[in-house]
Amino acid sequence: MLDKLKEIEKAASLEINDANSMPELEAIRVKFLGKKGHLTSILRGLGSLTAEERPIAGAAANETRQKTENLIEIKSKQLWETLLNVKLKTEKLDITLPGIHKEIGHLHPLRSAENKMVEIFVRMGFDVVEGPEVESTHNNFDALNSPADHPSRDMTDTFYISEGVVLRTQTSPVQIRAMQKRKPPIRIISPGRVYRCDAPDGTHSPVFHQLEGLVIDRHITLGDLKGTLDLFAQSMFGEGTKTRLRPHNFPFTEPSVEVDFSCFACGGKGCRLCKSEGWIEMLGAGMVHPNVLAGCGIDPDIYSGFAFGMGIDRVAMLKYNIRDLRLIFENDVRLIGQF
Ligand code: DAH
Image (spheres, rainbow, N blue to C red):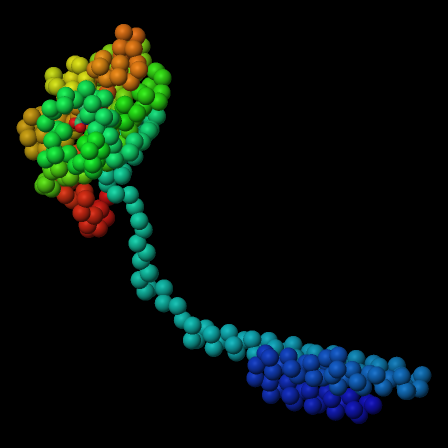
């Protein structure tokens, strides 16, 4: 038996020495030391030995196992190192190569402007509500006190879907929906798309964006409108921005005003942006007409309110210095990528 053990030891040592890979080495281990391996089958024969022979043979078998295991361990380390060296040589990483550039998306300037506008009014306590873009002529015109012969109703100005149904020409019909649904106090803004039959040019587009505002409560005055717009102007365009009201005429407000902001580019001195005026026309507004309140079931003797409508595209163009309205809608990434 001792001779057999020596033979196994020798054979294993030769095979281990010749092994070229980890799987090969593992196969050798199983072949000699595994449950059905050579050494195990020899150990089975221990039973047939005499009591004196058994411990000697047992010790010798253990020694063979130990020696073979050591050889495998050493070979395994060698193989691993060779493998590592090959990897280090072949898998070189050149960290001086430029990285792979990933394009990251971002907001369109129009959306950035809208988000900022909405955020300012939400901070003042306004709720954001939305209305449909396909609207009844009743909500878009009649309920807003627009006379039946008002030029804006004309087919050449308004997109008619069918008799009595239009693409809304303004966000003002959302006022009507809000007043029909809610009871005062009402304090809402409504951003969204509006449509008019205009050929596209630097300042016109058949689709553009407005932000409507409406406040209804007891004792609301034009002073509240001015204060609200002052805060908006300062938050949007900078601390020093002032507002100025000029008399105007809208069917749904009385009195009606147009509102200018002092030019934030020159601080009011006069420059190219404000065409030397020092002021930039920003929005339409006024005190909600008693007819409009009454039509929505709100008693004009108890409640009053102000409303305003502002072009979001216009604010975006001014804020981001975009000179042509068409650029907002063309979605040229060379332009959008700058914001
Ligand atoms: N709807 C008007 C427009 O499209 C803007 C406007 C003016 C809205 C006065 C209002 C307002 O709510 O009170 O030109």
